[in-house]
Amino acid sequence: MTRDTDMTPDARDPLTLLVTAHPDPDSLTHHVARQLASALQPRAVEVADLHRERFDPRFTQADRRHYREGGAHAPDVAREHRRLDRATDLVLVFPVYWWSMPALLKGWIDRVFVNGWAFDYSAGSGLRPRLQRLTTHLLPIAGEDAGGFERHGYERALRTQIEHGIVDYVGSRRGATAFIHESEQPSSGATAESVARAVRLVSEAVRARTPAT
Image 1 (cartoon, rainbow, N blue to C red):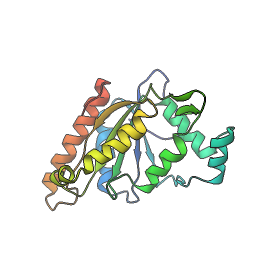
Image 2: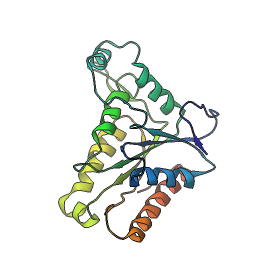
Image 3: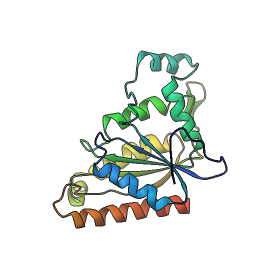
Image 4: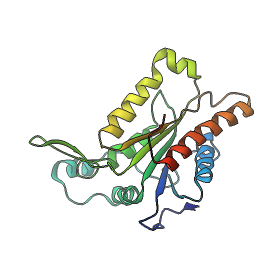
């Protein structure tokens, strides 16, 4: 079952939060998210469509002030914290723009994975990650073929910046990273096969509750 964002699942139930960042509801990104939500049934799933929900990715002066002084989070950030507090697994489903995640998803990370919630950092005590209870999976959807990613080091670069730079930094467990390559190829059959493989890898990793690649 896909839960609406205002529904609170039983705290005892594992919950997977799927976060998407694509403006077109008919895009392959949203199709993949729907396929994954279906594959995870009857496990509880919540979908956060950042475009539909009009999440503001801009790191504002208020966000900067909170970073420096603490205090209450902005309402939209606090809402995302509540979602993530309920989740056992996080899946980022996104198109690859310029060999990275879209600006909207990066802004979500900037504003939501903040000091005092995702981690604690001070000059005196250093870094203390806080999201050990969460497993994070990645489902990047790329137009380039796998060979091109390998030759130019794009996959390694993307994995380094997200898996190590974000997931490891906040202490989240690494889950599955499943690329869908050649997302705009003319053969719908080949695309469907690639989608099915990626959805299977991520859904099996979520169900197993152990890291997979």
